[in-house]
Length: 91
Image 1 (cartoon, rainbow, N blue to C red):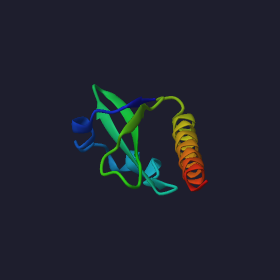
Image 2 (tube, rainbow, N blue to C red; image 1 turned 90 degrees about the vertical axis):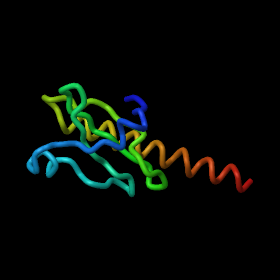
Image 3 (cartoon, rainbow, N blue to C red; image 1 turned 180 degrees about the vertical axis):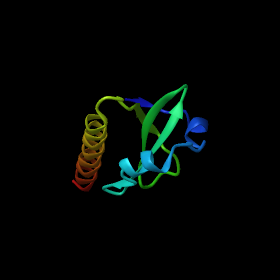
Image 4 (cartoon, helix red, strand yellow; image 1 turned 120 degrees about the vertical axis):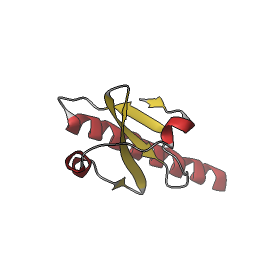
């Protein structure tokens, strides 16, 4: 997983409709998108309060499900960390 350059994030991906149907559009409020960069397919995700996809990882061609599960784990962890930070601020 790595941070994605802001200018790269604003570019649109050009994928077939069949490929896009396999990728969920949202997960727990976070937007998921795909992009081809240097011939490699990437899965990118965007925080609900941001206007660009800050995070991304290359999709394992032989195991799309594990890539999606990895991203879901990262999103779930980010949500838990945000909730923990809010609770700590209230104390």
